[in-house]
Length: 210
Image: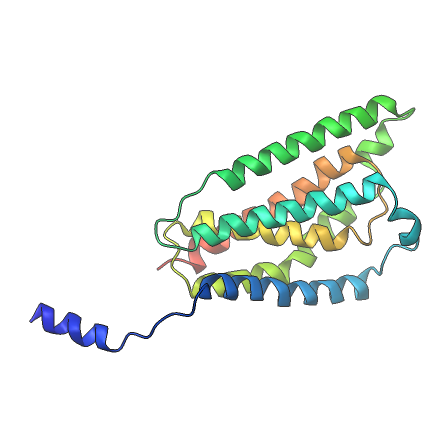
């Protein structure tokens, strides 16, 4: 009888498209990312000195750091979306990336006449507010995509999605941010990303539970 039940269930199975999970998650990321970009343009607008800023090291450091963290978050999310998914390399790479940024920040501080503006900047509250706000569309879309998958570690999968979303929000926010301190980036951008990661872990704990 058990074999008959299995045969009947298997008879209705449909083949899954190649890389269907990746398509769903990346599609959700791209669509929600466009929404977040529109929100940034409406709420903040592009920084007025973009043409000048685009040739500076700090601008490309912000661009590269946040984008790299978003891709690492995506890699971790894709693995954790599967049953029994376990991975360490994206987390180790993320820690190494933060450590590298801190080293660069210390070098910049050592060359600065006044270190405090490089650390505290003038927009801590703005960064800690708008990065999570711009991350929300990506986080919600990611959760909806993960809901259709099978993560067996929902809190960790939610945290990975939160890091992906927070880093994407930070990458978008960087187009409006005029801060020039690498330590500001290492401290306050990273804190904002971790806040979104923590929110994602809470969401995942309850929303992604089987």
